Image (tube, rainbow, N blue to C red):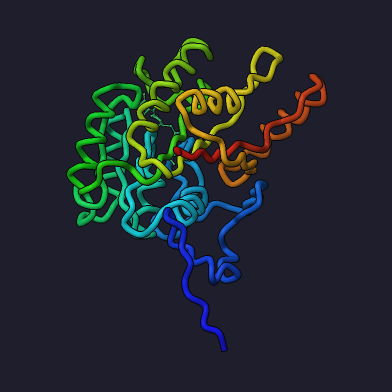
Amino acid sequence: MKKSSSRRLPYSDIDLSRWKDYQHILTDSLWLLKSRKRTDGHQLDYHGNFIPQIAEQIMLRYTKTDDIVVDWFLGSGTSAIEAVNLNRRLVGVELKADLVEYVRQKLPLEVIGSRVRLIQDDSTSESARQRVENALREMGSEFAQLAILHPPYTDIIKFSDSDADLSNCPDTCSYLQKFAAVAKNAYETLEPGRFAVLVIGDKYADGELDPLGFKCMQKMQDQGFRLKSIIVKNIEGNEIAKGKSNNLWRYRALANGFYVFKHEYVMIFFKR
Ligand SMILES: C[S@@+](CC[C@H](N)C(=O)[O-])C[C@H]1O[C@@H](n2cnc3c(N)ncnc32)[C@H](O)[C@@H]1O
């Protein structure tokens, strides 16, 4: 009998010679995820966090064991928890000092400062880029092997009072300028031949849809990122129970001729 030898991609632990064994890894562009994973250290403790399955799917697909992921909008640290669970390393940047402290306390003590580095800074800034580069160097790598960007969806959720916070931009134009600065930092710190993921939704205001997802996608492409995939993901698992407001939105939709958002995007980019 012929013995199959392992066949691995340069950016993943997936063995293509056993490709039928990876049923848990999604390859379709429509993600209808039933519910939020609440095991292995995850909880719905931060309004605006993404569901752990996003980090899990992306890391399994686009990183190898011990690779370093940089999350430029760390929030409550979903990606950091998942990186620890999957034996990846992570550098996380977050503007809110109290949140950075909260994430530090959620993670196992032994990974802090070694396999996980937390940086409190403004991700649009030169200083954040330099601090990420320093962290990567101290972890023995010139570049990150995966970048994650899950910015505020403009002001849909206001995260803080800081002017540096993307959720406090007065309009979409200034928001996109700030987002472009983060995309630049992400591009410059990412290893060539590796991937970046943008998690983003659109916005509806003043009777009009603002396609924020596609505008941010364009900013990523302007930096040099090549678009690989646009995944449409349902947002049901993101939401805290909101039966009454669901009905209200349904009424508003019927009355005003629009459709209620039930999806967001997970966009995959590649750096040549
Ligand atoms: C959508 S949340 C990210 C949630 C995260 N993926 C999680 O699962 O918890 C966006 C985060 O970006 C942070 N943020 C906003 N502006 C920022 C900036 N200029 N630099 C760094 N972080 C920023 C907010 O404080 C917020 O925690």
